[in-house]
Structure formats: C-alpha cells, structure tokens
Image (cartoon, rainbow, N blue to C red; front, side, top):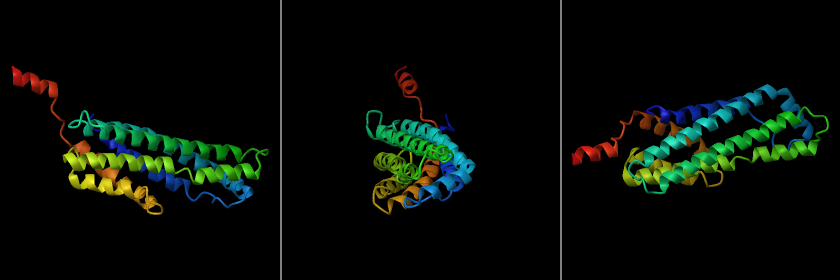
Length: 212
C-alpha cells in the first residue's frame, strides 16, 4: 500500500495530541488526596488521552510493518529490518501499558475504598512507565538508521545517520527525553519519503522477463 508509511505520521500526531490533552499529571511526591482529586476532576480529559494513545499504538504497529517491508526490499535476509519492526512493536506495547495504568488511576480515583498509598503507588508507576515506549522508538530508529546508512535506501543516508544519532541519544539519561521528542520528526520525514517512493519492481516478474 502506497499510503501505508503515512501511518507513522498519523501515530506521531495522535501521540502529540494525547500528551497535550493529558497535560501535567500529579508528581511522584504528591499525596493520595491530590492524586484522587486530580483524576476525579480531569477524568474525561485523561480518558480521551488514553484513547488517543491506544489508537496511536495501532498506527505505530502498521508503520513498523511498513518500515520493515521497505527496509527488507534490498536486505531480505538481514536482521536489521526485523529489529526495527520489533522496536516499533515494543514502543506500541509500551504506550498501551502506560494507557492501562492511567485508566486504572481514573477508575481507582472514584472508589472510596482505594486509599492514598495505593493511588500514590500507581501514580509513581505511571510517571516512570516511559522506558518501554521510549526505548522501543530508540531501537526502531537505530536499526532503521543503520540499515539505511549502509545501503543508502529506502531512505536518504542523511536520514539514516540522523536515526542512528537519535537512537543512541534516546538511551542517554536526561538527553533521551529530548531525543524522543525529535524522533517524532524523524518518523514524519520517513513516513512522507517512503510514501512518495516509487514501488519497487517485482523480483519474480523481472526474473521471468529476463529469462524469456
């Protein structure tokens, strides 16, 4: 599908909107009462954010599959396209797990029997549950960048090197958050370039023509 790569662009937009809608959630050091009141007052806002992140994960999976397809066109027996795909799957799973914890906080905030310590524990987990989806994006970009920088296709080499740099920076403390934000621009660029890329000729058809 020519429009398949554009699922990456849709995923980035949904993630950005979800984070904007979610806003600033309670900190790890906030009391159970503060957490309860926040999720009671912003339950609809947080529920919309959760739903958008779930949808973003779906589109991210499709983008990872499309990226693997394009990377594997000239590297059918290589392992880097598979690693890039695995990174996208890991990131989507991370978004879904984080969404599940947020949904649990929304539900728990309406329960009188759920005390402050339980809410504080769930909130602390929610605040630090960024490693799977950030790390997954880093793995995807690092593998795609290495494959592209080596072959010069299906993306420009400069974008491949950018993916390598961002993929490494994602795993560096304090710098990783900003690299994760910039990675959205990388995914958008890759989505547009892959969607505009002409279809590769069918290998089997080419072989038949040449032998006939």
